[in-house]
Length: 374
Ligand SMILES: Nc1ncnc2c1ncn2[C@@H]1O[C@H](COP(=O)(O)OP(=O)(O)OP(=O)(O)O)[C@@H](O)[C@H]1O
Image (cartoon, rainbow, N blue to C red):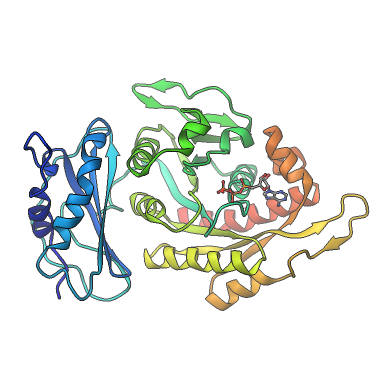
């Protein structure tokens, strides 16, 4: 079997018609196609205005792609998603040959611009993702304290909250006003020495919770393309939790220099962390390391340390899968209280045990960032 080419995919998509007779490719352009674990993932770039019209056509598009000659032994399923840009880019591009074989996840060479090409974020030195295999492990808390800690290390830092279903950055940074516009682009807000942007600044948090696929991708496209970051050494991206299509597409859209995976020491979370590491590896994104959050409990009265879930799980897991271990963050009430008060503990109480833990993490990651931007 050979991989489908751009021409084949576009031919299949041209059979998919809206009620007015126009084809799906009259409103969208083939943006990226990826083979992952036997599934052909196809991303179509469209305008925000057209996305609601195209969404009902996606099952037909998947059926048309499943009928492609050559879709057989190596491809068992097809998934089509919409990514909404500001304006639909022109469709087309020269038909290209198939991608090199091998690996469970392969971006297909479609010609006309791969997903990780193009200066989406001019002026930004490196982009680092903070991710987790599942929700609730403290990914956002880690991302916020790491970003502010990197700022305290003297780096020019931006923080993008791409956790679109649960944007917690405005609350954690104490930001309430919407971003200002400059020549049609959004200006990130200043907070605690860094620049920050979140979908939570644009819409009500509860509204974002119920968004469906195309709207999520549209909002992310806007956050990626419409923010005037200015000159940054590093942009920290708080990824949505998990390892699904939104994470994958996002990681493809941004040229990530590296990813940090946050986990708790529990077995189940470590399994999810392993899945997160695997996802980035499949996309050739270097995993900078694993952070163990809620690693141990420090009694605020006597300072006694209790390893609630056993100790050293994430360190051992990191060693087993061959990625660096970046450090431990204790379970401490003032981490949550500071986050809820909008003043990250790394800056609110830099010499507290929590502050010191985050500063140590920022020093380690800061050294890597300096190496990557130099
Ligand atoms: N080390 C810690 N000690 C005490 N509380 C913590 C710690 N880390 C995170 N928390 C708290 O745990 C809760 C979940 O944290 P957070 O929102 O950062 O998780 P998350 O992994 O980003 O979740 P999701 O991605 O599902 O939004 C928050 O109330 C946060 O204040």
